[in-house]
Length: 100
Image (cartoon, rainbow, N blue to C red; front, side, top):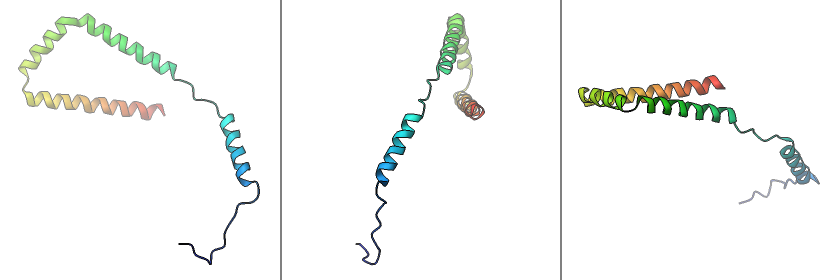
């Protein structure tokens, strides 16, 4: 419901055109964000390195882990897994904060 006591306010003549022109000018002036090729290359290199080490360690490492997992109680295994996830998350947050 409109209040009849409030006067109708209209923008000055040409105001919408000036705003649109300014927005278009800014859109043309800004540069596109570059793709982070260096981060992609570092991530790919890390994946290849870890995969290579894992492949080289191969079956013997899997056997050692299987024997070790058999001697650990399920509760301790859950706690160790959660601790590893927490540590990984903390490292990720730290890297993000440092890279800003």
